Amino acid sequence: MIAQLVDGVFWNIAVAIFLLGIAWRIFAVFRHGARQDLAEPRGSAASGAIHTNWSRFIPRREIVAKINLHVIAGYMFHLGLFILLLFAAPHIKFAQDHVLGFGWPAMPHWAFVVVSQIAFAGLLLLWLQRVLHPVTRLISRADDHISTILVFVVMLTGCMALFESYTGLRVLHRFSVELFMIYFPFSSLMHAILFASSRGYTGAFFSVRGVKA
Amino acid sequence: MSTALERGIETLKGQIDARVESYLSSCVHCGICAEACLFYTETGDARYTPIYKTEPLRKVWQQNYTLTGKVASALGWSKPMTEADLSDWEELAYDGCSMCGRCSMVCPMGIDIAYMIRKVKEGLAAAGFIPEGLQEAGKRALEFGSPMGLTSKGLLTAIASQEKEIGMKIPLDVEGADYLCMLSSNEVVGYPEFIGSITRIFDKAGVSWTLSSDYFEATNTGVQIGDSKIAAELSGRIVAAAIKLKVKTVISPECGHAYTTIRWDAPNFLKQKFPFKVVHIMELLDQLRSEGRLKMKDSFNAKVTYHDPCNISRRGGVIDQPRNLLNMVAPNFEEMRDHGDMNWCCGGGGGVSSNERAEPMRLKVFDVKKRQLDELQATTIVTACSNCRHMLEDGLDHNQMQQETIGITELIAAHMA
Image (cartoon, rainbow over all chains, first blue to last red; front, side, top):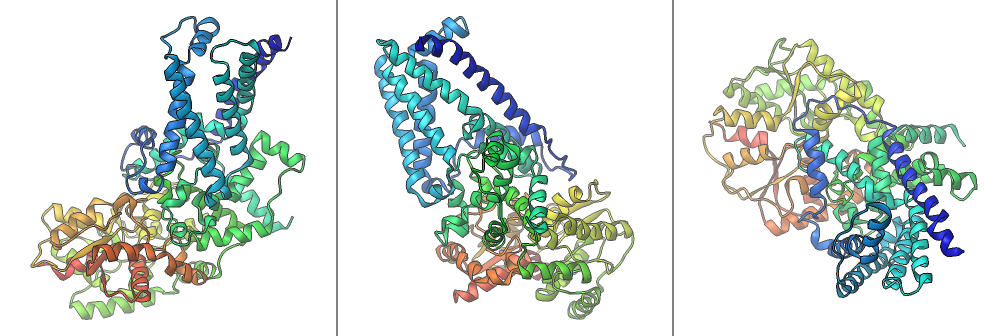
């Protein structure tokens, strides 16, 4: 009964809220419009937007020594999460059976274990930084902690359900994913999408002025 | 809710556009911006974290533009903005931020935090939360034409004195000149030799130029306060002077925010494309250098470094030109550790220098510049902003340091053939 709900109605509701919520948030950002810049440009706004979208993946040399924990833990978590999402065997099978109709090679079990440990370590380091450092402790919102906890639970239940030995574990993982998807559009998790427009606006602003940002 | 508070909140609501909403929606509160901010690194106080200075804007956005925020407000779960909040942020935004924009260069989400702090200032100014020093400077700028209260009469006195010193006529109100050179009252009062220097350089290089007795002031207190109306009014006076004299180009003097204002912001304040170009004096001098019109008689051989004014380099895009000029005249020019678009501010930008109550903080955050200078051991600091120069002199004096400061224009004039 619960498994049917989680795999059926709950899943459909979560997907609908996820997709409509993201569409709404993107609309909400661009509904305001941006003011046209009337100053004579020195460089191309478009090339600046593209440049900054890539350049901000790498921290500035002048500051990297002070933020190495952010950088290392950030990459550990984000890369780990994407690898798990895209190359865990159950995910590929799900995509093939229910979404895309085709699959791709999965990573071996040992790689899953290694990558998940790296991703967990990265997420925990980032969260410890958030609660222990005076700056992040001051500026963090409840939303930041809820987002972290949700991602942690999704990853944990995913590890528990890797072999799909027990339906209950698989259902638990799927349910946690549904909660994550429902929360996503209304939270700072939206940075996963809106970082592109944020970097784009700043890149365009600086490029028009002749600065590579 | 008081009328002033309501006005502040409404003004903050009016600042939300697609760019601001992108920024607010993508911030993950990582705190990396703090490590780029001299007000945080030199005090260790987390309240000076750049993104924290934008909190009033975030709060207004959250409560009025997001579903979760609206629900939380309706249920009484989120605290409404109060005058006490704005009062707290007045200190953070005006005393604890020089609008240098270094934070904007390091945010992994690409958030231009300085742009948002400027928006916060709009709300604070609308609600009347403006430091007294800036308020007074704004009044003087509107009434007398300069934040220091210097009138055209004062300019004419400085011109007469410089004409006597250099033995040359300084062009004034020349209709149809190619260039109109604006000045900052800080230059006219503190460094009047700038006027003599440009006169000598332009004369030797054959540049057709003029000053305007109608309006000479390049600085814009409206920008420092965060009041777009004042900013537009003051910018409009420059435009009117340029149109009246039918010049092709307006020259921004050695002043950082004056340059970004007239070059990049003023067309947007005034909602018009200008019928003239705007260049910084460094751009023009470098153009003259590249055309072979600047001939040096000798060089300045002391160990020299260059302090990048934030608004000219990082937020203005004039980075290579002063270096080209220094390489021409100063063979012992060396860079500080962090320079160019990642320079450290002098501490007095964004109106901090006009805000007397912020002086102890400004001198405290100068420690970062002191470390840079101690490391390099240059004997002369060259810059291209009279406000930076003033702040550097203050900081050097406060720390009993022996370095000398000079503006690039003055340095070139002193060594021209």
